[in-house]
Image (cartoon, helix red, strand yellow):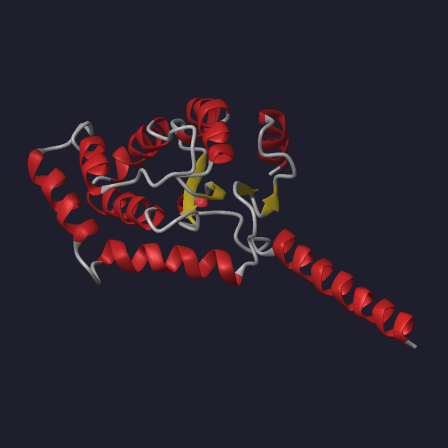
Amino acid sequence: MKKCWLSLLLMAVVIFVSACSNDNQNVHQDDKYGKGGKIKIIEYGDFKCPYCKKVEEHIMPKLKKEYIDTKKVDYQFVNMAFLGKDSIIGSRAGHAVRQFAPKQYLKFQKLMFKQQPNSEKKWITEQLVDQQINQLEISNDKKEKIKASYKTKDSKSWKSAEQDQKQYKENHIETAPTVFVAGKKVEDPYKYKNYKKILEES
């Protein structure tokens, strides 16, 4: 009888995990295109994630040159901010950059990943973030607005960061990076050919 209950419990766990996996696969099936009919690329990640840094260093330059800069795709980074309490600081700052200087966001993202150390210690501080903001090609007025926004409780950037966390949880995203292109999950996000295949078919 005990073995029977264990078998039933195991089956229930398998069904549950399978259901979550299927939900994960299809969460963006109706979210393929952005403004102007551009193909959507949605990346779930964290500035503290070393695997996301691999995507940033090896995939993003190619995507940017071939698809983002040529305005063929609409790229979105959903910051999960789940790798320590300092992760949320980076997320808020990213949203503040998007709000006041959207054309500089990808540069800010690149700068943040570049600062990532080879350890899991706390490293995202307001001082470090301010240093990256100072490197953006924008006016001092905009830099100050960005800094004020990400440091102010209940600001638009704080709420957007909270929305990112809500989104990854509701969509059952459990690993970073997880990438969707034209509504399809990229099975191996470290190989550029996998992105290109979906983009060419869309």
